[in-house]
Amino acid sequence: MSLWLKVWAPASIGNVGPGFDVLGMAVKEFGDAVSVHRSDHRGIRIVEIEGAEGLPLDPRENTAGIAAQEVLRLTKRSVGIELRLKKGVPGSGLGSSAASAVAAAFAVNELLGRPLDKTILLRAALEAEYHVSGARFLDNVGASLYGGVVVADPLRREVLPLGTVSRAVIVLLTPAKKVSTRLARQVLPKKVPLQGAISNLSKACQIVAAVAQNDVALFGASIQDFLIEPHRARLIPGFQRVKTAALQAGALGCAISGAGSTIFAVCGGHPQGARVGLAMRRAFPAEASFTITSIDSHGARRIA
Image (cartoon, rainbow, N blue to C red; front, top):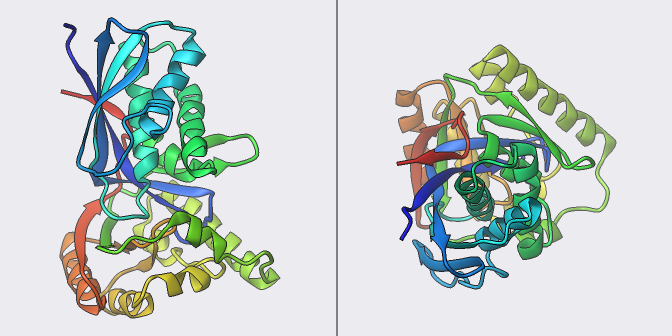
């Protein structure tokens, strides 16, 4: 029996405020782990899923299994691989399925001797996301794979890694109640006001500048969404109260993480992050937990 090879891929924040489907950011603390090894049978077999209920073991219906199969297809390898998946991304809005897909694609590629580079692994993980959700979330997949803050190009299906903001402390408020990504898409308008589009574009550009300058104050102040947040906020009861509480407690910026229900805030230090986290949890009208973390600058990687 061959030894198990283990890979971890971090959770991620999609949109990062104004960058709908374009800006992504990896975060520490949470992520999915995939362990793989060679087996005698051909193809991918998921033998265990830990940390989540109801996920299919059928590799044709699971993002990790689909991504792993896609790597075999791209490398034209006819081998057998067994896979164990350990879910570690809580709630919704933190790129859970993306982390599974990225971890699986990265793990199989490592097991095969790294025949594919990250640009190809990105495509494998995207296909897995598409088969399960019907959409290709480049911002989440790209951030989980590359780490740091990334800019996604939906037209070319490519990702540009920007780097990180070293002093940024990220507070995550994770409600017990999840929000369906499909529902969060359905509430979006077909048309948006020109001024709102201009404002979001300006703030998204400021985020890119903030990462380039490693400026946490500018980064936090740029976390403003004039287009999507007003429509998705009503799916998260108490969101406006939480956001107001976060800003009053000293957060530099606050917004919905991805499609929600997780809410994130950007702070300039850990003491401030602790105050903001407590304020956010107290303001939320239902069960929720908060985590103080930071930007994961490494992305998917092999671990012991």
